[in-house]
Length: 155
Picture 1 (cartoon, one colour):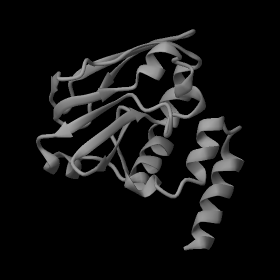
Picture 2 (cartoon, rainbow, N blue to C red; picture 1 turned 180 degrees about the horizontal axis):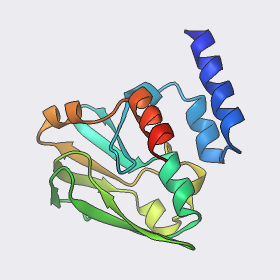
Picture 3 (tube, helix red, strand yellow; picture 1 turned 90 degrees about the vertical axis):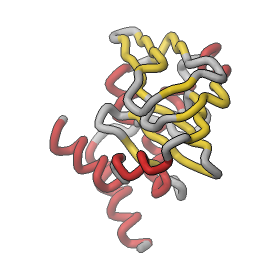
């Protein structure tokens, strides 16, 4: 297992100039619990609360994020709904929720300092949290291996 982690980390570090966010993800011990959409959002679930953010691929493609509009607490969302917006110096992007539920928290730090997403997309740069109403939707998402393969083959 350790050898596989070393191989993956070596492959990642050889494949691109890693952003700070990507470096953290490459050595993260919790990456196995993140699930992804093909639109590059991720969700990590603990006690029926899903924490949602965008992947390293997405933040890298956006460039420096300068604006974030996140959903309000209490908002009902359905998997696939666009419920947040991010703007960067080179693009704007909608964020689609990977799971259905009720927004329980939004990351106000990201709204006030959006560049946190570029610095820590899998950590402090999370976007919002949702109380899951349909946990079975998690079965429709990609695990880390499948997501990495998808990104490699399609981009």
